[in-house]
Image (cartoon, rainbow, N blue to C red):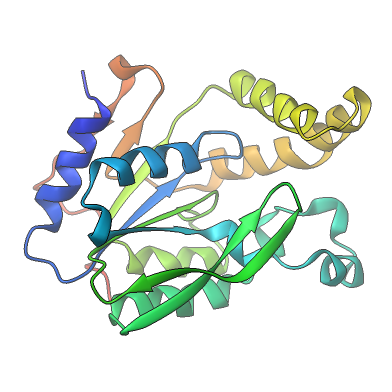
Length: 224
């Protein structure tokens, strides 16, 4: 049985001796990526650990309206993937002082310059839906990661969580249902169908957690 403490230990072990170690935490909408990232960060050295949200690179709503994609916000093509790639490159280059955006779900906007990643940070946990996609511009991000984690949650549970998310933000039952059916679940299906393998698969059911052989490489080494 694998615990969060075990996973944090794995990150510590794999990152030993690295000046900068970047972990991808991927999974469909509603899987609990932010929760897992925060839980792992709490178990790692606080001064050396930062969390980067891929959601911080959402296109602004006004731009999505102009692009005719406002009703599909959160789909793979509604993010500044190139900007995220540049940020990951800067992270790997260990620039002295980086500032990055975060996504404010309550306001439904990305806030620029919201977190700082200082030179003392060794461990960067990147969380996002599409970090393991094998097609489109997202596929190029794979080379930036030293370790990959995919969260595995049954689709029915994802649907339940997503409906609850919008209800908690004040949406009506009908509005939440329409958004989940027309937007969130198609994004869930994209992640489930088009994501590549991960070094570690994390499940809310500890008995289902599993890892690949750490001695068997799954990809080319990360590049700056």
